[in-house]
Image (cartoon, rainbow, N blue to C red; front, top):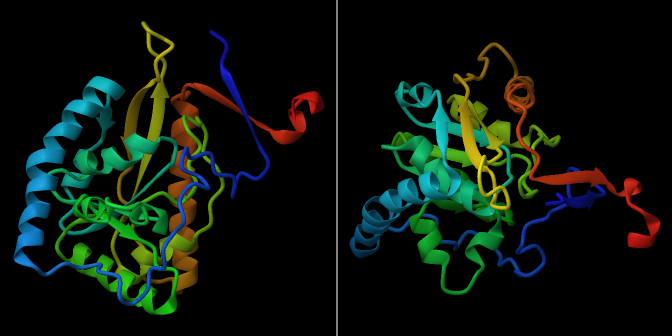
Length: 267
């Protein structure tokens, strides 16, 4: 079976998510309900997250993705909240795996406004841990406060710094150091979680299996100015992700090539 080829123009900004361009993001301002205080909503959120989705995700990820997690003990040893950074390569797995990495703690995922802009699903995705990035100054204050409160409770916050999904990409794309301002601000560790794809021995037409390799925690350097500390964390996380996918020879289910390599007749 021939491998699918995808041509890209800009590794920083090209987005190959199935929903790209199909959702009109809503404004996330100061009035967005990042925190729900109603007892009924919170009771339902507990049932949805802990009693329904968590066991479902364990089964689904094991059966469908053949999920393996290496060095999860590094996360269990952390005494409080922490940040996770991973490569963004799978629409479903990237939404599901943080829950399993953080278990028994609760996981939250920083998402785009698109996630809470789909009619009828905003409450569900928030119950499952979505924290949408604000797109107004007033909303950003609420976003930071909501993230801080969850970290104070000892929860995990997952970040995909590549921002855009490249399905089954087996490398690490360049990404800015912007999101590393969060662990520096909170003085909490950043942990890298590299997704590695494994080719199936049987039924190779199916998507590959997944291994997640977890790093030991990287801590903000208190001796550095905030901007330098953020760059330092970025350098360490990026190096771990790149080295891990390279050393483990992550399988290329889809081949990504620069657009200039494409046959002009096929463009």
